[in-house]
Image (cartoon, rainbow, N blue to C red; front, side, top):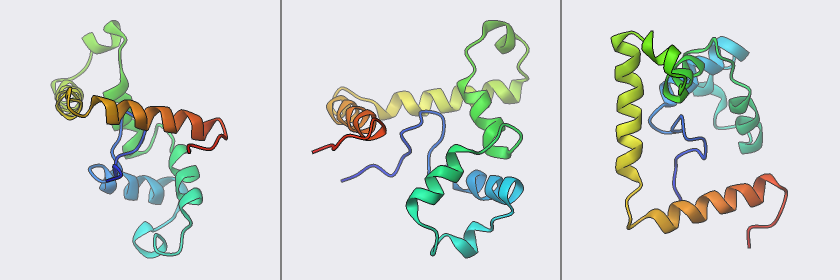
Length: 119
């Protein structure tokens, strides 16, 4: 079964869908609820990749991805909660049983990004 998660480690296509919807509306003026059925997958991916840091998804991704100790020292309790929940949920998803599948997905993503054929 193919994963419905993004290959980006800081957002999930399903779990963060409401953030994606609001970010598309804010940045592009696109109402995904009306346009998602006619939008091509490649267009959706391109627009999602271009989501800026001033959108709701951009702000959450920035919190989840932060590694700078000085910045982390100044995080609010809510920012720490968001980051810690994300990290805990990600850690649960990568178990020894599914590590091979995760690594295979990563390999295929890199091959695809490089323009190669994954088969």
